[in-house]
Each structure stands twice: as C-alpha cells, then as structure tokens.
Length: 230
Image 1 (cartoon, rainbow, N blue to C red):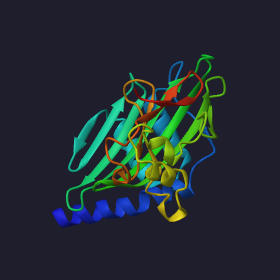
Image 2 (image 1 turned 90 degrees about the vertical axis):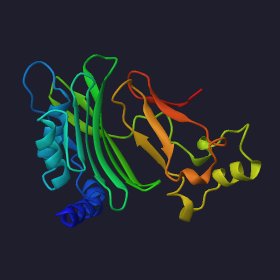
Image 3 (image 1 turned 45 degrees about the vertical axis):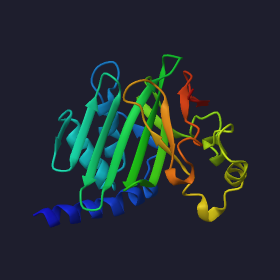
C-alpha cells in the first residue's frame, strides 16, 4: 500500500505544474451565499472554471471540510484570514507539492486581489513556483485574471546583501545566464497571517546565509511593493 501511495504522489508532482500552466481561466464567476465570498468560495469557483485541473478539483472537495489532514496530506481552510492550501508530501523522495490561494481587500472597498500559487519542492530546492493574480469585483461577482500587481519584478541581484556579498557574486547576480535562471528564480509564499508575500531564492546554495538579502512584497492597498526585510 505504501508503494502505491508514493506512486500516486509522484504522479501528482508530474502533473500539477503542467495543468496549472495549460489551463488557467481568465474570467471566473464566483458563487457564494451572503454579501461577500470567503476563501472557500474562491477555491471552489476556481475549480469549477478550471475543469481540466484534477488537483484543484481535489483541493475544492477537501477545503469545504475545513482544516484537516490525512496520510501525507494537509489541508488548511482559514476563512478568517482569507487563506487556503492543499499540501502533499512524499517521504520517499522528500518532495512537497502545494496549492495555495488567498485574497486581499483593496483600499477602494469594492474589489479584492486573489492569488493562486503552485509550489513544487524537491529536497532542499524548489522545482517550480507559478503565481497568478485575479481582481474580484463584488458588484459583478466576477474575478478577472490580471498582471502581477507588483511595483517591479524581483531580479537575482535583489537577493544579494550589498554589504556582505562578494563583488564577484553581485556581478554574477546582475548577469545571470539563461541556464542558471531557474536557480535564481523567486519563490513566493502567500500569507496566512499578515498581508505580505514572502520571497525566497529557488536554489539557496547560490548565496550563503550571510550574503543573502531578505525581501518581500509588501501590500499597499491595491498591489505590492518590493521591500527589504530589516
């Protein structure tokens, strides 16, 4: 039985990111009761729109049961903080695969920003991180896919602490080659508590802990500003 569970998890790893890339709905009708949707409503509405994504279908089925877990799997449904996640772990190859969704109430008090994040972690490195954003309008009950609401993109050199990183490494971070781009890619973690998006480097071995600059995307009421964590 254990071998079969591991086989299922490996198949999940292989299909999760491909499904996310291939089938991301651009416009989603959000179904809910009451005056405003909660995080479970966003998850289930996304799953209904993305009919070819089996992983999100499972996420939607599980999240309505509330926070719980079973063999190698953890589900979080935090309506109060507007956060939900579906995480699967394989003890055999030390891989973790995670779907996350959360939302932010915008300053205009009429719209929300909704994020969908897919993470695949193998051992000590991140294999894939795909983050997508939507803007939800409560007047139409529709959320539409938007460009990432960041003031600017994260660059490899943003991960370097200028005072503690060797000049050669800073220069290398400024001119990362295509074959090394994945190692320097930003990995995002959505907030269950607070409002800011955490950012880490895909391959932590590119910089020592003392050389690494900690950064995040700080929520500003309608998007995010890249900020150094003091």
